[in-house]
Length: 388
Image 1 (cartoon, helix red, strand yellow):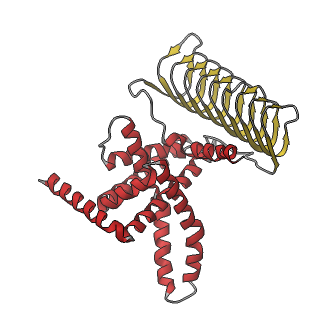
Image 2 (tube, rainbow, N blue to C red):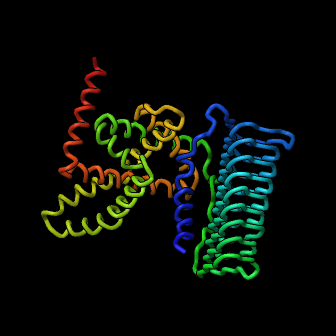
Image 3 (spheres, rainbow, N blue to C red):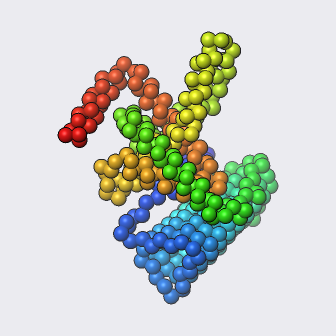
């Protein structure tokens, strides 16, 4: 049971960070398109495809991965690798030989998926075949077809009619699976889970020029703050970045630490401090620190994201300033997606807060002080050498 339910957590974590860690597998082979785009049935594209626009139609063959953010997406052709799509309306009736990750208000998947299918939306229909797992979060869900591993469905109105080779986990206000054929175990729970009336990707009431100008000003301002942090505290920045996303273990530790400090420890501590005259100044200091971290702790994580992407491209000795620029750009793109952008920001903020306090804990630990002093001396020597 716990093994199956862990997939829900893993999927949620992946969906929050998915675009942050995406990097082309073929750096020198990629096609970037803005605006409406159509790949005709007779066309074959031997590149990874990146599209940002209004209406996207894929009738041909894409020999690579595909990443799309648009108003309307229709895929009737064949994709040799993975597909990541965020759109108001998503329709996949073709063949995807890799994973499918789709976010949208209306998601319709009658096609076949060669690996796993991860779907989030308001109205979702998945009636095609899935070779691995089918995981769905939505308001109204309907499944059919053959699924070679597990089906996990969380929503309001959930109807499962699939032929499932392994287990079914279903949670909804009105779950129905009497027409399903399930070889493994079934875990069902009634509850209310809904993402109805949500606008995905684009807000029709806001012009693109307003979005672009606001995004640009915010992005530049945050980058300048991050550059200042790198300049003022290079050693601490290095340690915080290492404790953010250098490994999966560090990421989880920092996320958990940030969650505990922000939501469990800080609020009662502030309340207790304000009860005494002596504690009021301390409460003000703590509140100011938390306020600063809530807005800017994500910058350290963005440096780590930039480092990971640059390293995957062979630039392992890139500067923090370049890594911050890359990480900022990734965050800006993700934040254009409602809900996903907000959840992503919450996650990297908690990771940044946790990494900051873990760095502080290490500095206060006697066993770590010698290591910190050595690191500081090395950085000082490097600075002197660069000046010469």
